[in-house]
Image 1 (cartoon, rainbow, N blue to C red):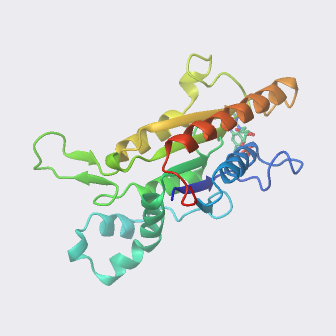
Image 2 (cartoon, protein in one colour; image 1 turned 90 degrees about the vertical axis):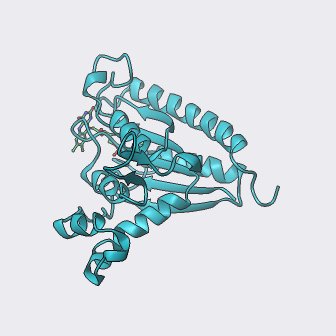
Length: 230
Ligand SMILES: Cc1cc2nc3c(=O)[nH]c(=O)nc-3n(C[C@H](O)[C@H](O)[C@H](O)COP(=O)(O)O)c2cc1C
């Protein structure tokens, strides 16, 4: 059975096709999941609403605990890592990760940054050994065949590669770097632009994103493990 992890990070509640002032990224991720369920009704889907409930930012205790080797951890350290362990377990279990992440001030929303800081974990998602031959850091999820779909939205336009604002886009490039660091390098990016203008260009951008989502689901659903009923 394939497991899908669906993450929403917009601060706006509701999806833009169902509610005034709703979120485009929530709309895209919901459409992805609806299409996935239609094609593979028996797959398991985990949902986490980071926009509504942000993971805790990491603390001094968290850092001390994370960089203490597992057998040497005191009870307070295990406690400090509890939430991060849950998020890492969820990520490790997922075959397909749908990250619906809007652009806020050229980067990811603060809640999604907190999520990233909690899942990049030495000994669990990346390795570190300063005495190792070759690079001291290595990705721990490379053999897990995970696939990441980044669904984003922006108020302005031109942030895709080759666009006039590509240099200012710190969403997809950042996410590719972070997830690639963990060994997740199969990544698809689909974004909506022109939200601030709300005109035909937004409508066309939404249409295009929805078409690309249907194609991405079709391709991915055909190449991941068959559903249990097959
Ligand atoms: C706090 C904040 C910061 C934003 N910063 C940018 C930005 O840097 N560049 C941009 O093009 N749009 C920016 N926007 C517009 C959002 O990216 C746009 O409204 C997008 O549709 C939000 O995603 P959502 O529809 O899923 O909520 C910003 C919006 C907010 C609320």
